[in-house]
Every structure is written in structure tokens, then in C-alpha cells.
Length: 558
Image 1 (tube, helix red, strand yellow):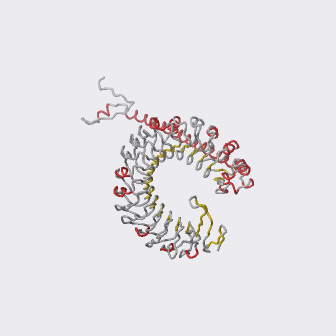
Image 2 (cartoon, rainbow, N blue to C red; image 1 turned 45 degrees about the horizontal axis):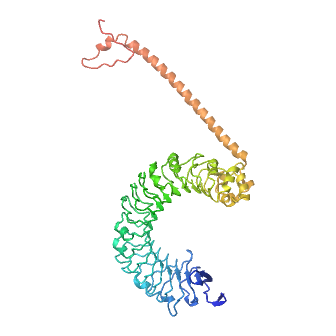
Image 3 (tube, rainbow, N blue to C red; image 1 turned 30 degrees about the vertical axis):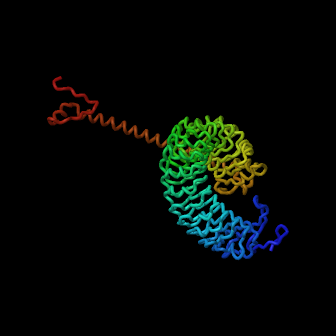
């Protein structure tokens, strides 16, 4: 028993019961059973006034539950608005399990072992708006599976084993706004299925093994605002592919096999704000690829094969674009610089994984509003202080996975003004010359959390040790490190001198021997051929005699 808001409330011993606030109903009671090892749901000890019931389990202590009409008999939980039963190995849903729960708005049955569902599983849920069945093993669903859910707005069937969508599957779902079919082996989408959900606003079918889509589907769902077709197998899209989706705001085509974005492909998608073309096979964006996208805010073209740009490609988005991702292409810095010159209002730039060793200090001179910069996964060995001094509004910087060894006082002072930093996985040198200032800033400034997480790369004795574990006494002395480096350099220089001497001596000897050989050979030949007519006399008629220079034959009788 527990007291909640002055009234006695029943609560199972393995659960936590607490008062919450709901915008629609005001004060509400939430029952949360998340310890695991449950074999049954303790409904006899759950207060019937509960509005939210959450049943889950950690991975090491899984539940093994079944779902029947336990919330409806003998007395229904008429106040129940949300029911979450997740991570509980539920194999199936019994018939009429939710009958009489007319106030139920949301059912969440994710991460279970459901293999099939039918219409009778959801009978009586006339006010349900959200149904989450993702991360199960559902293989098939008959026609009209959801016909009792006439108020449904969101349906999530992602991460199942669904291979076919039968006709009229979504009958009676005229109010459906969000449908997620991602990570199912569908391979094809039947346009007939979409006739019953023509008011759809968000459709996701990421990694559905799709090679193409019948564009008739787009005619049936003209109100789409978000379309996610990432990680499929599209190789080519026509210029009129999305012509029917005039209200589209977000389009994700990342992770496909597109080799070209043709001119005017998005010409009718004037409201598009987010476009992801990452992880395709693009070598170039056509000059008119972004035509009419005058409202585009975010563009991701990362991890393609792009090595140059048509400057006119970006003309339509000059006034609207706020973030752009160049990462993982074959782009030289001068190509990026030319584009950035015409994008003065850009706020976020990603230039990761471009093999950059250094960035010119005036690189962002036209981008004074820059707030976020990602230059991770490069080869930068010296902190770009002068570059970042010109980006006064920078609040997010990712320089992880570069080759930085140290940060001096000026570098650290600049970093203090940046709210979100990632400097992990650089080649940090933990000696008294390189790390002392960093340790001081760690102890005395807002950089504490950022620096504490960094790990030493050298010396070997401290490899993997975090800066948070270091003290000044732990650090390698400067002289030792310096002398070791100088010894290595001196050794290499001596080795080079020795090798050079050996090579020079060998060349001299070789030339002397060659000179001696040719001198003797010439004398021998002169001795043997004082009378060249004898050589001609020994040559058979019709044969070719080879005479070596510098000998000159004089004809007989000359």
C-alpha cells in the first residue's frame, strides 16, 4: 500500500507507483514494473485508477509474459490511457484482450516475440491513436487487421519479418497519419494498399529491400510531408519521381545506389527543407539538381564520390541553406571553399573524413554565422587557432579522430568559449611539456569534462590512461621525451650519412671498372681489326655484317 495525493493507492511490491501530470486529465497515476523476472502481470494489485502502466525488463532479467483479457476482467481498467509491455517475450495477443478499454490511447508492445496479429486482437479500442508493434517477429497480417482502430493516427510495424502487404490491410484507417514499415523484407509495395490511407503525412520504409517504387503510390498519398526510403537499392530515379508530393518537407534517400541526381528531380517539391543523399554513389550533382528548392535548409551529400561541383547547382539554395555535410567525399578544399563563398548564412558545416591536414586560416571568412563545425576523422596535427578565431559564434566543434598532440594556452582559451566539444581519439602526448597546461585548464575551467575524457596516446606507459587519472607526477619528464626524440633523429641522420657514403663508394668503383673495361676492349678490337677488309672477306655473300663504331670502313681501291 502507498499514499498518493492523500488517498490510499494499491501498488504491487515489484512495481513503483507515482503521481504524474497529464495535460488532458490533470493528475494521473503511473504504475511502472521494470525490475524483470516477471512471469505474470500483477493486475490484482494494480490500482484500477491507473492511467499509465509500464512493464519492462533489463536484458539480463527478461520477462516471459502472455497477454489476455487481464485488464478487462473482472473489472476493466476504464481509466487506462497508456499501456506499455516491452522486452517481455510476449508470443501473441489473445482475442478481445483490450475489450472495454475505451479510454486507451496508446499501446506499446515493442521488443517482444509476436509472430502474427489479427483484427480481434484490437476489438473495442475505438479511441486508440498510437499502436507500436515494432521489433517483433510478425510475418503476416490478414486484410482489415486494423479495422477496429478507426481513430488510429500512428502505426509502427518496423523491424519485423513482413514480406507482403495484402490488399485492404489498412482498411478503416482513414485517419492514419504516420506509418513506419522500415526494416521489413518487403521488396515491393502494392499501390492498392495505400488507397485506404490517403491522408498519410509520414511514411517510412527504410531498408525494405526496395529496388523501385510504383509512383502511383505517391498519387495516392499527396499529403506526405516526410518520406524515408533510406538504405534501399535504388540505382536511378527519374526527373518526375516525386512530382506528386508537392507538400514534402523531408526526403531521405541515403544509403542507396544512386549514381546521379538528374536535373529538376525535385522541381515540384518547393516546400522541401531536409534532403539526405548521403552514402550513395554520386560523382556529381547535376547543374539543375536543386532547382526550385528555395526553402531547403539541410543538405547531406556525405560519403559519396563527389570530387567537384557545378557552382550553379547551389544557386537556388543560397538564401535558405543552413547546414551542409561534405564529409567522406573526394573533395579538395578549394572546391568546398568556392561553395561556401556563396553560402554566407550557413550555420553548420561537416567536413569529416576528407584527409585534411590543415585548413587555411581564412577558409570560413564568408561564413561568419557558423555555429557548428565537424572536422573529425581527418589528419590535422596542429590546432587551427587562427581559423577558429574568425568563427566567433561557434558553439559546437568536433575534432575527434585527428592527429592532435597537444593544446597550448591560447588554444584552450579559444575552446573555453565553445559549449559542445569532442576532442577524443587524437594522439595526445602525456609528458610535462605537452600536457601540463591542459591539466591546469582541466582543474580550473569549464573544460574540465572535455579534457578529463581524453586518453593518452604516448608514451607507451600511459597509453589509454585518461587525463582525469593523470597528475603532474605521472607525466613523462620533458627532457626524457625530448632526448629520446633527439636520439632517434640523430640516429636516423647518421644512418642516412652512412648509407649515402656506401652508395657513393659503390658508384665510384663501378665507374672505374667500367672505364677500365671499355679501354681494354677498345684496344683489343683495334688490334684485331687493323685490316677491316679481312672481316668483309670472311662474310658470306647475302649476309649482313655488323660493324661497331667507331670503326670506319674504306672501300678497296680507295
